[in-house]
Length: 271
Length: 224
Image (cartoon, rainbow over all chains, first blue to last red; front, side, top):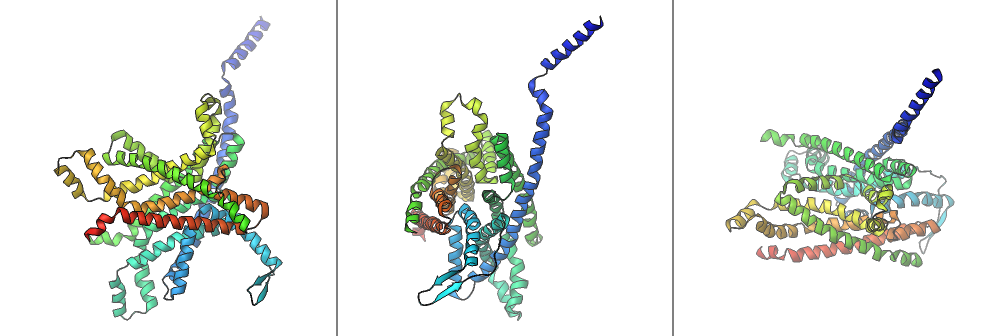
């Protein structure tokens, strides 16, 4: 009797195990694995955001510098700056990113080893006594801020010119100095013309950060690519990355809307 | 230096043909989508907006990777459809498809914006002449397109620049040859050469588009 029950029980368990489909028994393992993979996306997204924000910061400073040069009274400097900006805009982003990453170490090595600069009449021996090791992340920041600055400087120039001339003339009539006029009158007013353009370029910058994965920065795209190769499910993982980029874009758009509302709040008061 | 230049120049036809093919298909698709948005066709316009959000909100690199590497995940199913399978295993097809969809999304935004910017009087004039909605669109759309050329030339440049991503999926375009040369020699001047080539072609494209625009908008200049 006992044996019969025992056998029957084992049979029943066997039957139950066979009743369970394969995927149900694999499910816990699958969940643990996928959670571990998903968790790696968090720091990777952080790297992407950090990269974008750092590039935005340096890019804006560089853009202001370029705008100042472009608006300078000396024609040669203005022309040269315009040419450099056009040049950067005419070269693919990926070429700039990869070029900066590959060229900078070689260039600094060359400097460290020293070389003759042959200028026809004079020959200079150029050598630096320091060697710099630049991380891929910083190379990415250099490339992206260059790109951002090239586009943003055009926006800033347009914004400065969009501030009505009457404002500057009024400041002049009040005997304000040129510096004061710029920083107290023009500078605060130009943002409402600049914000829409700058915001648009921020969205472009955000998408360009994906290119930095090609120079081994461990950002969202790089992480996703590794996971996609390892788990052999590229469609799912790339789609997930696209979704994360989309979410970041949506959040950015929300912030831009608030910012836009803030810089144009005086218009609404008047109306 | 000279050898390097000639090696890189081999990639120019590939880059240019990808650009032309992508722009051609993207333009047709963008026209269709603009029509859908302008005529406010119920379900389709919702789909169009979704399409635009997806393709303008994500990096192009991811779009290319999804189209090129994505189908590999469904190999067991797709293997039964040899035509589709062989199509998606060609990198050239994938890059053109990705660029077409991407460019169509951006162009649709641009064209639709231009159509919205056309003064309402023009629509009213069309209705006053007894035209129905589709007939009016046929009048308004060409006008809007001509106005959109200057903005569209930006899109042309962007697409030409984006073809450099083709090198990421094993296509030997300008960027592909440049990368190969660099890996062989560690000579960073190849990047300067490639940059110069891209810049010259882009300048030419800008110049051509500007002339084209002037010709298309000649009727506006005459009235002034």
